[in-house]
Image (tube, rainbow, N blue to C red; front, top):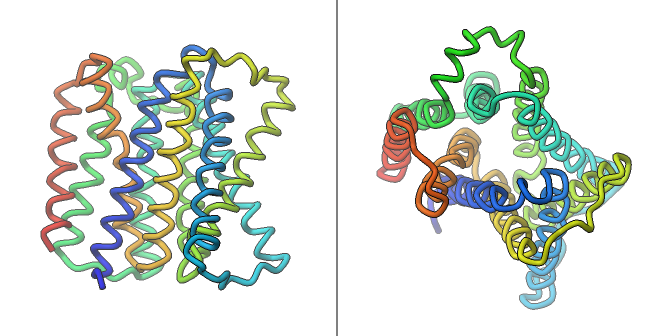
Length: 298
């Protein structure tokens, strides 16, 4: 059986690649149909993919439902779904108000906060080499997301940065969600729980779009494939991290690895969209890869 660390690395890398690819495909849709439309349809497709996975697990493979779904379980699944929807909407709102280069490193810090709280407060046991890898990962994540010129222009006075309040709140909520989801899904049927949580999140986003009277039928034919890819890759991310949280106690490893989702996004955007990679992003990418190699070598 794979070691706990190997499972945590697999789960974290799955989250990193899944969310990184989802963000890359979102670059192809948001400018044309808007962020909420992309978010809504991406989650509809993601819910369908997760449903197919669940049906295959229980019908195709003959697995039995092991979890007991009482009222408290349903309420918590709904809570996690709505909370994660709120995180997405706050991030998009914040980025829409201000400069992504200033706000992105703030939100990216949620994975580091999660790791620190898990180790310091909840007593997660990590050895010195794992800690070294985690520190490198966190440093790399921040460097990848930092835009030095944007920060200089704002003189680091975040109190007056447009969108900072939304991003700061999203960061705190994302940290709380990650730590709580880890505790909730630990040792349980991670795939089924992920499906229900994700379905509730999708419903919450659709309700938000309905309340705001956002037209979801403005999608151009060539955009559908990217929306489907957003849903599929997001499914990979949520399934991977839930597996990691369910089967291991290494919350910090899963959180920080999955939090490095900007790495595949900037690489793919450079290769296929010809976006420029800054020197800071290059250094951050190399440090992040180094952190991953340290963890993988243990």
